[in-house]
Image 1 (cartoon, rainbow, N blue to C red):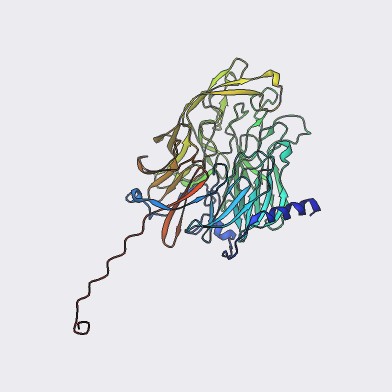
Image 2: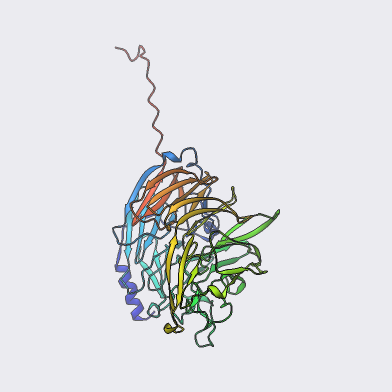
Length: 530
């Protein structure tokens, strides 16, 4: 390690406020494959991305009695977009340049790490990951740091991408075996998207998969960045990640063809980074509709046969069901207004309509640039077979600007109309079984539970508990701020908690304790009577 990097680590370590006395963490690969009920060990809770809790104490019959257990105020600017993780009774969560460890029972702060400020784009931060006694944190300027889970001290720091070139970091790393899987994000021209495996003990690069050609090769398309945490199938030993859009964003003429591997779902070997299969939800994207939305893994019947499926509700307005063993399409359908395609090809991919590409005189496009959905995590409930996603039916006017040339954004879009809904999609048919109005475009992710509940947030700052079977509201509470993270659930001391965030505050909800039974009235006896 050179002296500049050593100085950075020492500075970062000094920035952490430490409280001693935390329990030792020992999260191993076996726990990550089968998380205990008293934990939430990764961004999705488990490797599948389903965000479905097996806990049932809080259910459709008693959720109306949900009350606040505690609230934690970060006292920092910004909106919480991170998913907290929980190990050994301690919650860890983030804002850009900040990591907290708090007691999951009381909300009491144990330590707070503040990274030195950078000039990187602070668009958001999805959270930390854990293995053994280390936390793994992506800084806004695209460094991967290993923190001591007990103290918040920085153990090592490696640069993943050069933020000065327009790549930064938002993702929570995915831990698979002895690999920490990370990538960088960004929308500028001449950026090369990649996924990197890093040694969890040293930070040394193990392998790198590039989603687009190197910039010194003849131009096809660049970017294809990694914005979100992928998923993993331990049985198949495959990792699944979605990639970002190509660049220039709104000008596709300089990059003919499908522009692989942008806007693509990738299946990779976690040991080598070798591509096993790919499926492209948005070939030759010209609307900024990346395919980084969560690739959700589930097993179930499809056309009467047991199948291993991957499902994605994509930003471009399409819902896909894919055989995750080989990448073959099983179902493609829309889940809102879509007008940019000529239909679907034999492989289940949308066929772009050239007449709907951005033009100097404008084109009316559905959905808008924000997409039918975005970073908000969906949930899959195996009991009902419903894939539940926060959606935004929308229309926009798209323009390209020839004067901007072949670089960067190369155009503009102007939103005309949008709304927020929670859609419950039947995975076998693609039909929407119910929709729940959320107001304007909402930012909350979704959690389902075996208690028959769906938890999310609406656009006006309300936490919601819905009946998963019907979409009916059973409980709500005000957040006091924008809801931009995804709920989680865990069990401690035999009681279930629901964790949500609003603005820069974390809230823990639980059922109130049953009142203690009154003491039995004693009957006086000769021995007690004077």
